[in-house]
Image (cartoon, rainbow, N blue to C red; front, side):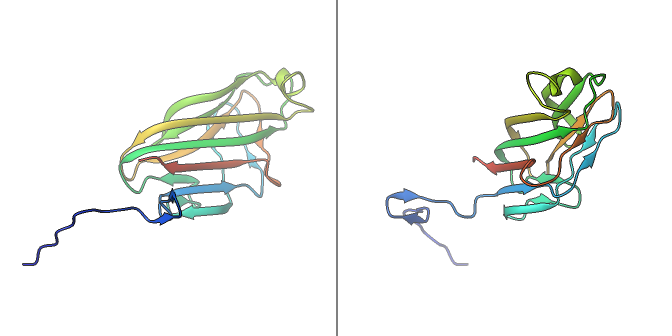
Length: 165
């Protein structure tokens, strides 16, 4: 049997900057609306990948799948639309393995037509750092008391994440 002895392992470098070009990361966007259903958490659908290093985003199931154990950071920015003043209890949340992780928007319909939004639209952003095991999955879900949709044209919705270590 052969043995390999190594005195030092160094990351790939570019000048004085250390880079890790194969670190798992992704960014996805929308090209169509995701329609919500009253009182039901709906997974936000993603249709386009800007990048997916490590092939870790599953566009079919709209989720990130952790390729290795580690700490990951995620962020999202979406624009909710078609919100009526009567809609209350608008929620957007991260889910891990189908289980609710954290809320990032709790608003009433009046917010979309008042100080926080405009004309039935309500912007929502969130970020979360979490420890995952290999094959854990993360998605974004939303709900409200009425029918609320996620806007899907242009750059109005993004979801991204990367392995910290």
